[in-house]
Image (cartoon, rainbow, N blue to C red; front, side, top):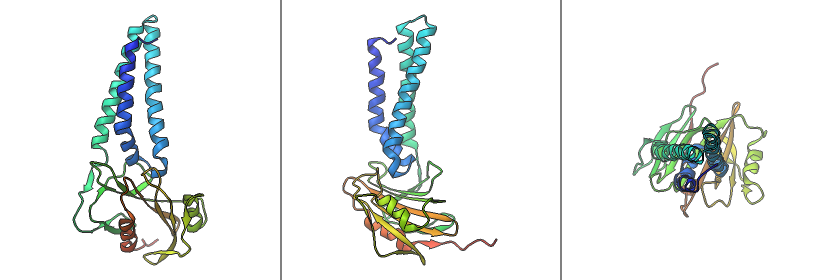
Length: 237
């Protein structure tokens, strides 16, 4: 179905996925879903290109040239889109500052740690996303998700995050007067949180997750967010 030179657009697509795709996945999904999100993007891109190439091959009366050109066009478009969207995705809402600054996110607010960049979430799960060195890394990510949780208590949610190799601290944490649980994991990249604080407020669960890469210590920034956290006044019903 394909000519031998069809390998070149495949290589270009693969290189772009390695160079840009993983970084885009880090910004578009939760830290524990990064690898699966990235792998699915690679698979879908190759599958779509192959399908279009097969259609062109059949329409062109089994022409290798038609199939290979179609494959090349689809993969080049996908590669160009990947590079352009990665460079423009999650534009900073506020650039990094030398001093912590307060930011409000609807039902809560906290101080953004010095040196961290607030970016616009690219998926519906995230209510707030902070990134450390987004242009060259990212080397750290703070992500907050709000929603209904399956587990009945903060400690059970934290235990699910901890898994077999992490731990849930014995002492509860307090987030502006509301008690919760904290999990610590031996994570060394952005594919999994290193810390996850869990609290319940009214009908929602709040996950405050922090992950670091390239040996960056993100514990101080994570603790600063918890320490400066404030709840917005409850709306009257």
